[in-house]
Amino acid sequence: MPAMSTVESFDYVVFGATGDLTMRKLLPALYHRFRDKQIPSDSRIIGAARSQLSDDDYRGRADKALRRFVKADALDDALITQFLGMVFYASVNGAEAESSWDNLLRLFGDEVRDRIRVFYLATSPELYGPICANLSAQGLVTEAARIVLEKPIGHDLDSARRINDEVGRFFDEKKIFRIDHYLGKETVQNLIALRFANPVFERIWSADAIDHVQITAAETVGVEGRGDYYDNSGALRDMIQNHLLQVMCLVAMEPPGSLEADDLRNEKLKVLRALKPITEADVAHVAVRGQYGRGQVGHEIVPAYLEELGEGRQSDTETFIAIKAEVHSWRWGKVPFYLRSGKRLPAKVSEIVVQFRETPWSIFPTRLEANRLIIRLQPEEGIQLSVMNKVPGGDGMNLRPANIDVSFEQAFGARYPDAYERLLMDTVRGDPVLFMRRDEVEAAWTWVEPILKAWKTQPGTLHHYSAGTWGPEAARTLIRSTGHGWHEQTS
Ligand code: BG6
Figure 1 (tube, rainbow, N blue to C red):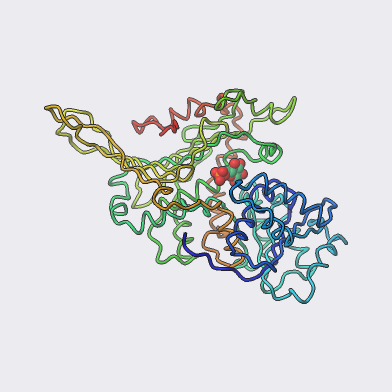
Figure 2 (figure 1 turned 90 degrees about the vertical axis):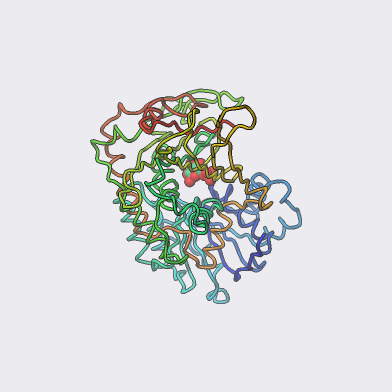
C-alpha cells in the first residue's frame, strides 16, 4: 500500500452523531485511519445531536458501532480504547439558536482556535442552513473551519439552490465539501487512470467505437430502517442524481487539463450540461421506475417495500429506476448511457459496461460478439474485456469470446478502504478534488427535475417487480433497441 501521510491534528464535529451514517460509516472510517496512523491522537471527534448523552454514553454507542461495522481482523481492544479517548459528545439542537450550543462551545476554548475544525452535517438537508447560521452566530466558524454536506443536497433544484445559498452565506465555496461517497471509491477514482493513463482505451472512447454504456448500482438490501428518509427520496434522488451521474461524468468527460479540483470539475460539469434534456413528455419513453414486492433474495424471503414501510402505508416511491441518458457532444453523438439502480435486486454490484460496436463486416462463419469492457466498481473490483478467439483444434475457424480479466485484489493485494476513509481525510487536508462543486449539484438537479415532475402527475407509470429479480420487464424493453440486454450479474 502506498504510504499514508499523517494529517494535522483536528477537531471533527459530526452533527447527526447518533444516526445510521455516523455509526455505520463515519466512525468506522475514522477508526481505520487512526489504525493506519494517519490521525494524530490529540485530534478530537465530537458527536453532536439532540439526545441527552454523556461523553461516556456516546463512547459506549461508538464502541458498539465499531464492533458491528469494522471487520473482525481490524478490531483491536487497546486501539479501540485509545480511539474512544478521542471521542466526545455535545447535546446540541443544531437548528435552534438556543442555550444547548453551550454544550459544544465548552469544547472550543482559545487553545484549539487555530486548529483545523470540520463540521460534518449528517442531518436532514433542511437543517444545513440553520446549523451554519448558528455555527456562525456562536463564533465557531474560524479561518480553519470547513463544512461537509452529505447528499442529497435538497430534494429538487429550488431547495438545492436555497441550501447552497444559505450555506454560502457563512462558508466560502472553497470551504464547502459536498460529499458524494462514490467519488471516494478507489475504483471510481481509477476511472481517471484507466482512461487517461492508457491510450489504448482513450483512442476508442467515443461514438466511433462505442455502441452504448450501461452503469448499474444494484443492491440486495431493502430500505433498512431508513424508510422515512427513503420514502421521501426514492432511487432517482438517492442514487441517480448524484452517484450514477457522477460516475457517468467520469466515463464521458474530456481529458481534464490537470488533476486539480477545478480542472476536473469543469469537465464533469460540461458533461452534466451536455445531457439531452428530458422533457416531461419524454419521460415515459426514456425512464422506467419500479417498486419491489415480496420475494426471495438469496435464501431469504423478504417483505414488500410497502410492508417494510409499516402497516397500512401507501406509497408510489420508486425503489428501482432505469433511464436512458444522452450526452450531446462531438465525442458521444447519439451513444446512449443507460443508468440503472435498484434495491432488493439479486446481487450487490456496481459496474460500468462499455459495449463496443460490431465489426463492420465479418469473414467468419460464426457469429461475432462485439467486444465489451466491464469495469467492476464493487465488489470483486476489476476489469474484464471480452475478446473473440479461435477455439483451438478442429478443422474450421470456430470462434468464441473469452475474457481478459484483471482482478484488482490479485494485482494489488490491498484492502479496499471504504470511500469515507479517503473523503474524511480529504476534508481535513482541505482537498476538494473528490467533492462536488455547487454548479455540478445544480446541473444534476436541473436534468433530473422534469422526471420528478412527470412522475408526480403520472402515478400509473410505477411498475412492480418481485424482490430478488432484476426489476420490471419494462427496464429490459428500454434497452432492447440496442440489440443487447442488460449485463446481469449472476455470481
Ligand atoms: C447511499 C444511499 O448514498 O448509497 C443508500 O443513500 C445506498 O440508499 C448507498 O444504499 C449505496 O452505497 P454503496 O457504497 O453501498 O454502493
